[in-house]
Structures are given as structure tokens and as C-alpha cells.
Length: 268
Image 1 (cartoon, helix red, strand yellow):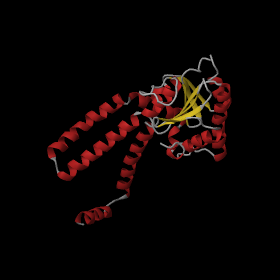
Image 2: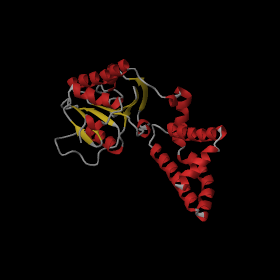
Image 3: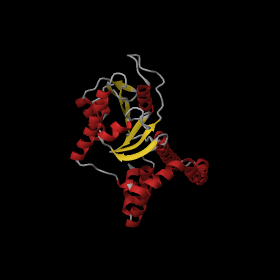
Image 4: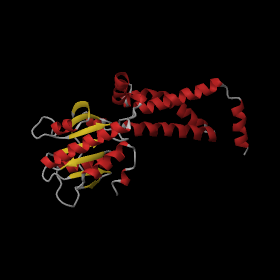
């Protein structure tokens, strides 16, 4: 109780300068997290921030003088190490800021969202009927930039015609995966990790193993069109649901773009 009263007393001495100071620090942390958004380094950065905050709070509360001295003298080395460790992510993030101002985010109108979903579904239906193999990966919270850089950059708004062209047999981009970020096809012909253990039900090819592999290591959603049978499948969290129709596929893609849990449409 005494600690609470002391905290309330300290708030009385809070000036607008102190409030501005706190807001600026919070803004810096926020911008750092947004800067690394879309890369696999975001989890490492969050862990480092939480660890530093926890250690600082612990040493301050318990009055650990030697430990506090060690932490205080390690911060300068940490500040030097961060640009070295995160050099690729910093470069890509700064390029994104200068090119598109992506830190401001984007919101889609409902009509545009439905149109985009329909483009993906139509492409998969057409590819299924023609038995043209396809692998489309939808990026979620875990960044796929490492895999994007293994392919050919496209950076185009998604359309059914573009997806059909990419996966048309014997074209330069038909092998590998297409990776989508938001409403854009970021890259094609991307190399993905293969699943360590292939599913026991039925025969699955390289595309299906790649879809399972990327969803085992990230929270992405992968759509696969079988080249042999034309069957449409969706993989998430290392599991695969096969034989999806047009309406079910549309529900999966809609849930992804609306930020819903994949468990609602892809049961474990």
C-alpha cells in the first residue's frame, strides 16, 4: 500500500516535459518494432527489449549494485552490436520507409478486399481445372523476407491473370512459390524449406512438402494446387486441409486478410 501511495505522490510532480520525454521513448521503441516488421528478426528484437527491461527492473528493485554496474556498462556494447546483428533488416526497413512510407500502414476498403480475395480464388480454380501446379504463400506476422530474397521480385498488385501467368508450365517463374504481402505479390520462384516429415495420408509432392515446411517454421498460410490431380489444399501450422472448394478457399483467404484466427476455418 505504501508503494502505491508513493507512486501516486510521484505522479503529482509529473510535468508536461516529463510526459513528453516518456512519449518520445515509447515512440522510439514503437518505430523500431515497426521498422523490423516483416522480418524474422522481430521476435529476437522483442526478446532483447523485454530482457533488458526485466533485468533493469530487477536490479533496481533489489538494489543489486554489482549487477547494475555490469548492465550499465554492457548497454554501450549492446548499442554497437545491434546495427551489426540487424544490418540487413535495418537496410530493408529504411528502404521501405523512403520508398513507400510503410510505417503509416494501410487499410483496405471492403469492396477492394473482396475483389482481391476473388482474384486469388479465381486463379486457383482456373489453375486447378487446367492442372497447373501452384504454391501461393500469404505472409502473416512472421516475416518471410529471407525466403523472398531467394526468388524473383515482382511487387505487383495481385490479379488472377498474373497468378495464372506465373504458374503457366515452362515459364521462367512457374517453379517455386509466390509470396504475397498484403494485396501485393512480392516475389515469385521463391525457395521454401521442405517439411521434415511428409504426411502419411496419400502421396504429396514437393509443393505440398514446401507448403508444410514454411507453415511449420512460420505462421504463414500456404495454398497449393496439385499438378497431378488439380486438388486445392491449404496448409497452416504444419497441417494441411485438402480438397477445398471455391467457397471454403474464399473463407480461408478472407479470414487471413481480416486478421481472424486460422483455427476457425482450418481446424487442428
